[in-house]
Length: 125
Image: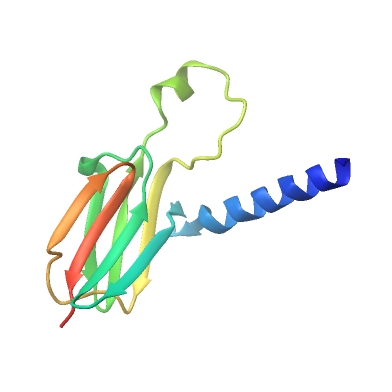
C-alpha cells in the first residue's frame, strides 16, 4: 500500500512539473510557462491559457514574427506573504509562454480573462 501511495505522489509531481515548468525569457529572466490548450475549430483558433490569480493589467499578448507571446506577472497572494508557507505549487513571479507558428496576422476576435484562464479566439484565414 505504501509503495502505491508513493507511486501516486510521484505521478502527481511529474504532472505538476509537466504543466508548470520553469523557463527562461528572451531577456534571460527566470520565468514560468503556463499550460495552454489550443483548439482548432472551423473558422477559428481558440487558445486557453491557465493563469490562476493573474489580473488583466498584468498581462501582455503580442506577436514577434510568427510567434504569439503571452507574458506578465503573478503576484504572491497576501495570504502567502502573511504566514508560513507549508507548500507552494502555484507559480508566481514573471511568466512567459511563446507559441511558435501561432501568431495570427490579426487581433483576436475574443480576449477574455475568466475563471483563472485567458481565452483568446482568432479567426482562421
